[in-house]
Image (cartoon, rainbow, N blue to C red):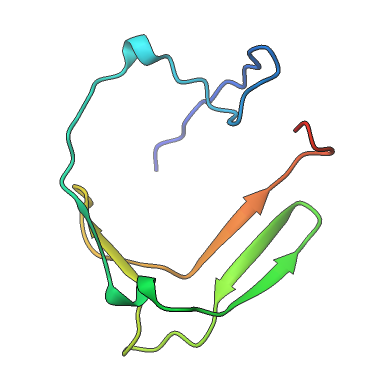
Length: 94
């Protein structure tokens, strides 16, 4: 597994991410379109857990007949959606 060394830089206290992307060192690349399973356009239920640092949303009632999947976009396969999480700072400015 490759370990990334990411530097946190605040630019005028107006950043949204701890990743400092130096755009002059990036390359523009056109990717194929993503493909989402048809269940992305339906209503889904999640269980939300607040652990004091993140909110974890876990998809409920997913079966072989209604899988939420993502492929395309030069991804190496088909990916199954299971959960997402959100982080926040100590106050509204973080």
